[in-house]
Length: 345
Ligand code: AHM
Ligand code: MG
Image (tube, rainbow, N blue to C red; front, side, top):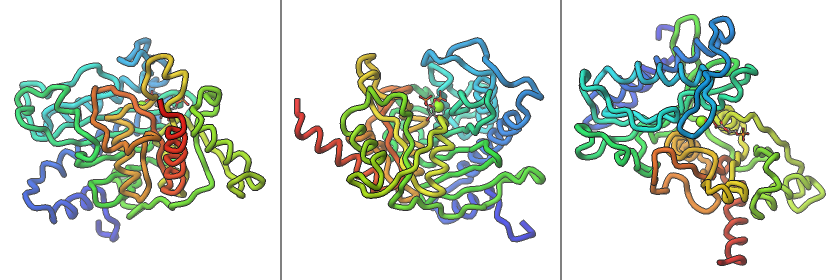
């Protein structure tokens, strides 16, 4: 821009220039995603003024009540990204099946997964929510007949991952595997401007995030970690810890990218008894956030393995998520390893 500021579009074009064989398809796809996020941001900002708050009176595939904004954001993402010819198919938290690009449009070489409005329990109380997305390459025949199997790629295969945070300001944070950069929406000109170049997560932290209402169901390694944090200066860690829980993963990850921290939605006994494998979804929550966190120098694990190396088994598969500052995540990983070694089946 004339004033020396760098827009998201400019940033991506310049980054792609250094990639052999780049056709501009990816830049163009990202532009459509950015447009969708601006539209969602506008709806979120206007809230009750435009009648978008409250329940839609329906349930999604996971049996969760859909908010009006969940449904609107999903539609916005589909319409913005289906027409341009960059995608073969999309998959969303709000749709049971894969959404193949309609026959009337050309099909492209990428796949897009997204959670159109994450943290939607926060919408009605006017607390930050966000959009999470992940871009994969479409393997083999998938361009002609895209199926759910095409999406079942480990997180290490992601071409790009990002989130939009609809908070006091709207931000877009993304990675293409070359570090993490944050952009703030300048509402006056309608452009995302680079404001947070090369975001990195401090290796150490004294702040943790977990929904403590599940404490009685936690596995021993998680309970041990949190107990030690709560014991503070007088406990084994010898330091006081702070705690935060926003119930909006995008806001939580953004805080961690900004000042460090650890976020946990672990496996617990209640989930196990119900046959569940976690709370958060692998393909459009854990993998994109894991990619971003790792690119910022942090770690993202289930407690027992690296999230990005998991072989997905289903479109809506749930996994435990523990991510953030490297040394703390490593500690939780170690506690699981120690526990499992002494309690082998
Ligand atoms: P959602 O995709 O239905 O909004 O659920 C995901 C959200 C995350 O953003 C957040 O970390 C978590 O659910 C909060 O869960 P809880 O309500 O148990 O605190
Ligand atoms: Mg979600």
